[in-house]
Amino acid sequence: MNEINPTVTEADLHAYADGHLPEADRVRIEEWLSEHPDDAAQVAGWQAQNAEIRSLFAGHEKSRDTDSDLVSRPAAAFAWPRRSAVAAALAAFFALGAVAGHYGPQFFERPELQLAASDTFPREAQNAFLVYAGEVRHPVEVFANEEAHLATWLGKRLAIANLKVPDLQTLGFQLVGGRLLPVDGRPGAMFMYENQGGERLTVLVGRNADNRTTSFRFAAADKVETFYWIDGELGYAVTGEISRGMLRKVAEECYRQFPS
Image 1 (cartoon, rainbow, N blue to C red):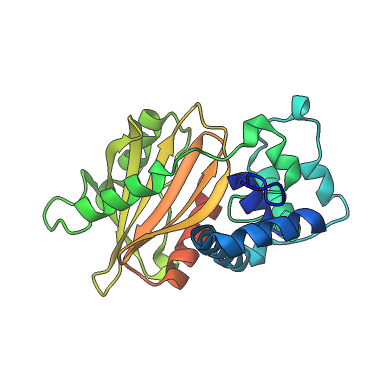
Image 2 (cartoon, rainbow, N blue to C red):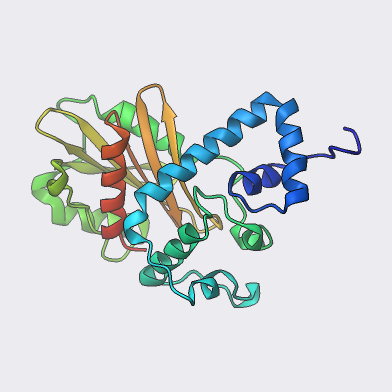
């Protein structure tokens, strides 16, 4: 590595993609990208995700003069807020242009908000969809006619008080049912939905008490698309072979209904 272009870290690339670098560093990263096409393609993908996430949460963006307070509190005083505060913080993130799970310099300085080392969660969501969505007789363990029991049972297994099964009828999807399944070696919940055309989608919920990351991302494998987000200890993923636009609407509706 030459002195003009020292080692570029992944955090540098994320900060560049989100527009959080001073001019001198921006020029340095652009020089690096011009010489490393794989990194350039990855950054372009992150920037496309940024645009997708801005579009998804545009309805929640309400900027206020006090929004900056949500991202500048001392690290020692930081604690995951309640649901209303999370929504407000997200609005502030998007208003500041820090989206797609890659936040600005303030967040890279906080060890409790570093990005995950790997993205196993979306792969598990995609695998669950591929295994169960095609099942005809046994797609779920508990069917929709026992929705109350389903919510209570899975809520206890995941230690989530008052777990709500998302209602997606306004988007044309009826609940098929749900099942318990492992997510990262721990109990997880999967809810399955189907529309009148026979298209199915799954909603995965997992808990990891060790999680310290926050992210809002898309993942794709062949024709299977996943939108997933991590909120404190809880991770959520919506997966299906449906249009990305509809997937975003489903994810937004689930976000509104799920507890934190």
